[in-house]
Length: 283
Ligand code: 13P
Image (cartoon, protein in one colour):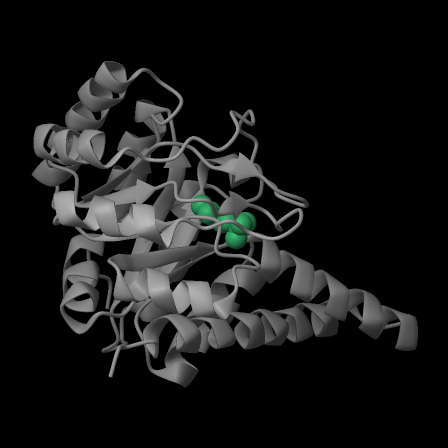
């Protein structure tokens, strides 16, 4: 069944788990993510970024995800990732998305607050959850994010408290040292800063830039308030590496067969992340 982000993250927060949020842009990726959730029996966030609107329309994504999850008991969230355009957010809500991310992180604080608040009013009226971001992530290697690299700007804990109080967001994406894409060199992830943010903010916290983040750091983040972790680059890197390997051995593969294999590879990599995030409950 399709649920809101708020419902799914509230439960994750209680259980000190994180739910994986995986970027989709094709039927292979949508099937792969849904299949992984079914195999592992864990909730999943199917995330479609506005930067992939050339690959699929909002309506196509919504119809496919709804169709594949409607008879499931497992909770799925259909989420719009990073979006600065309020008209697209409105369309996503109308198409049936159950969660949207308004990303005003590049704007001055007051403007980010005002825009996020307006999106919350519009989305909450339709029982759709809202994620927003404070601070910004640097761009690593192989990222497909289209945004300008503003460099790493860490989230300030006091500003986070004011931001959440004033906007009414359901989840807050924080910048603590992860990057969009693969890390260049050793990651410097500030779990100490995350602890400070958690003291100030009661809504579930979101970690963007999950790809390549060391498992031990992921566990520490989940123990300290991260309830949603986004993965995009590694899903693509893994599937493309498998595709290349396969085509070297079997260059005459029919497209339809390759499509099925790619679904399976997406299922494999997503399933691994799901277990790490969801199984990382502190004992
Ligand atoms: P990665 O591409 O680094 O996994 O980040 C994904 C992300 O944060 C999408 O919003």
